[in-house]
Image: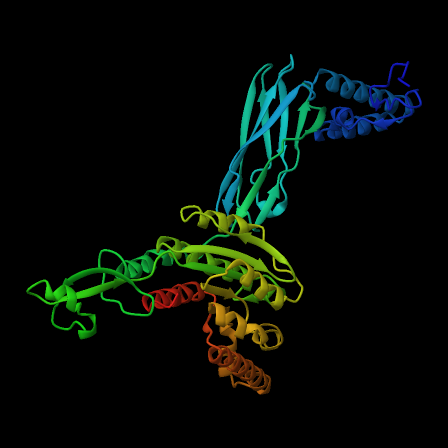
Length: 465
């Protein structure tokens, strides 16, 4: 049944029981438009008026002073520009590297008949680091203004913006109309890719293998490149006798590293990845190493896939083109967080085997935690190694080496013993993995990305991918 009465401006008619000005739910949009704010100037004038009235020591003077202030505030609100006739939009960056600056602008269009003077507040969560948040503005009737906040995010992930709050101050500066306007916007904060600085050096090494400075490379599975004349120092095994028989000079075969090989990067996002080493979570260091490897391998002509796993699969990047794979991986890594659950090694192994039917290089970024690996990964290694080449990369803690060297007092000696025990356990699990045919890279956070890239280049040069 439709309402036959005029609904109150503050309430939205529900249409079921009629409206008497008290039934129904408050209209959110109208409630925001009717918000009123009192300025500090009004409070100061009220204080002064109260002190003056008290000097007369009469109740009538106090009531008269308060009444004049209330009337002035009501008149100021009535004369302030309407906040309901504003159109608010956002524009700017949608992707920002962690710790790097970005910018998002707010455009306010005044569609009313009065000039607006007041404050615009662009609301973001604190981790986005928006500066400034408030802007003093003056927008003529029918005009618009654009204000921009500089962002410097401190956390990865999707960071949605809050509403834009606009306060329209009256001509006396005593009171203001205030309203919050939705202006949907979100910024994805991407991993910082600190190891990008190593990329030129690794690409130069790659060019030595396959590029302008091509050298003789022999190894299982290496691809034939071309023939050239024999020079002193070349291996006799590289001579192509059939080609030499057709010419007067000896000819040798040159080889180049394999191309179009597949690399599957497996990122462990379980409990151990949340631990901090040198001030950074292990997961962030592993992401940095994965990005450097992906950038290098894509330039080398290989195909890269990525999967992030703990107790379930958190992210997949499969089948991206070489030119787009780094951006796709960066985008997927941005929203990943370490999960405080134990990683499921069985799920990890089955996911890899389901993704890669043919032999490929599997790069597992995890922690060399003896208990977790012995109970989880080691029993599944024979199947994985029989199907794929496995390279395991882990972040080592340089503080263990420092603690092991301390002998200053009794507490330092106990700490050193504990550090030596941890280092020995780590060495034992590394030896076990090596015996199973796993290549292991164990390096501190600042050296892990470069060490993993070097291991990849060694395997590529030897034709073992």
